[in-house]
Length: 312
Image (cartoon, rainbow, N blue to C red; front, side):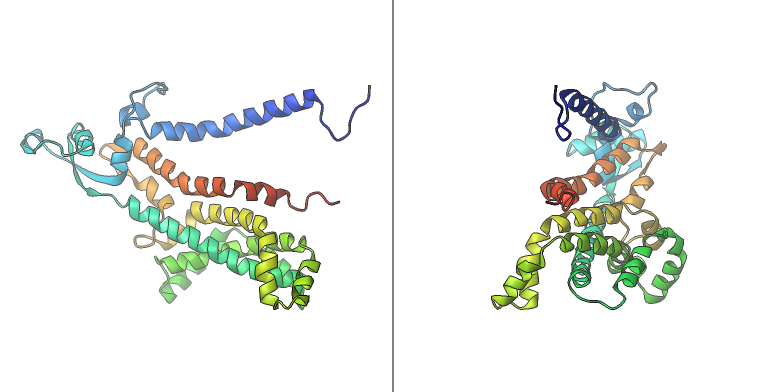
């Protein structure tokens, strides 16, 4: 019987499929539990043993988007009937809605800072990677190593100097300050990843464009960028994930105007303790933009990760 050294056997495919499914379930169970907790009531969320079957409730999402205050039974009876389901849910807990919460503002701050820093990192990283890939840059290897070395030190190690510098420059608690900071952290990752992708694009494409009368910029824009789209997409996802989930700098450098969702979600405190359904609801909503962005670019991501892995 002959065996192929490249084509896996049916047994190997079965084992590989089992391992992939098992790994997927193990990684998805915590996310699924967070999603489910967002539809529990506070008592159900802390019940022991944990409840798998329960009556769904939107109390967590109502608590996430509102601030509430407790009133006496006499004050509660004097109020008019609830105007919507949110007021009805809150009044069942002997409370009334005092106003909206700050989650919406913090979520928009995350969108502005996360996507803004990602765009800037990709823009600058693509230009720098193209320069390193196509031109003779003096001390290129040393410069590339210096850029890479910025990833060797944990960013939080320089948190205090950055805090003092930002306070002096007036960048503390500003969108611009956080975008510049996250861009500075992500730029090394963008340069190194994109340089690898651009190196794989044959120079002959650009040379043909230059012969046809294109300028260097036109050749870069119309020839290189479309070919590097897969690398740009995969790099953008990695940069966005860091900027979206970053916590330490967000806690240290923001407090109100530019505070993002990660440091805000743990502060969702309800009357009598931590409101786990509201926290889970906030975490679920916080996952959606990155999830949608990744799904939208999934084809580019898969091809970008494997780009250049197999050569003819």
